[in-house]
Image 1 (cartoon, rainbow, N blue to C red):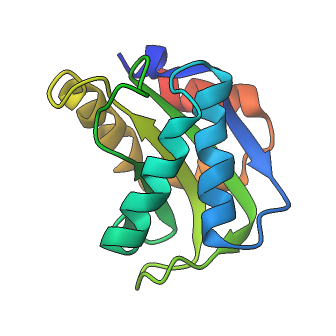
Image 2 (cartoon, rainbow, N blue to C red):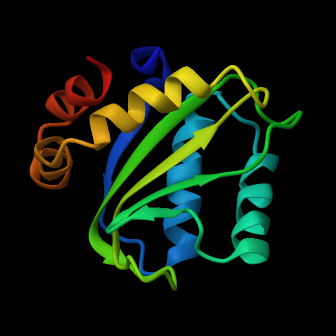
Length: 145
């Protein structure tokens, strides 16, 4: 299930984000490139960030930007934006270096996907590899096998 969540354009290194909202926009744009969401999804993600604060930051240096299911979600998916220049979100777990974007078509079908994702991310070696590996094929294999 995790293998299907990451589309062909869903993993990127990004050098130019200088702020938290710019990084969120860049990460969500990867979902849009893979036609997982329409352009309206970004505004809902940014709205959730404004409303709830930096709750997207789930662990030191790791965030999952998302919004609730809606008509602008075309297919459940994930994307990873690795920030060469980490950004500050306002969380105690700043700065963020690994920014995942996530979208779900409903409130239940993605539970197994998130469970697989948590299993991968609970391994410190995997997280370290995501932070330092320059070969995006290796990063993709790490996330999808």
